[in-house]
Length: 70
Image (cartoon, rainbow, N blue to C red; front, side, top):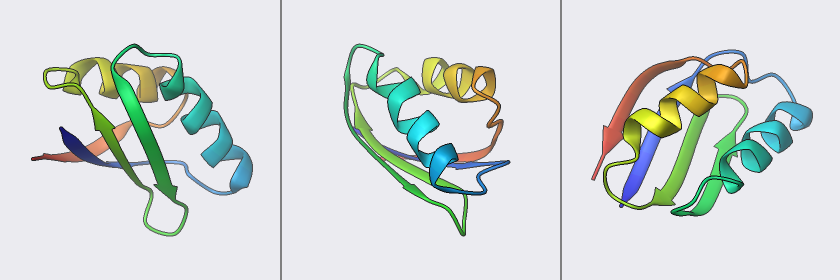
């Protein structure tokens, strides 16, 4: 399933790396892409992981402002 999450505090490549590595350790996550300008985190992950993904991003310091699934 594709998830698109708009998060706060994405400012640089280091932020992108932190997000990619933080989500990569979760089971069920296949692909992660981060756009610095928009703060958009796009990923492919198993269905039903939305809350886990949001909690992980918040724990990393990138609270989720909005989510689109589909």
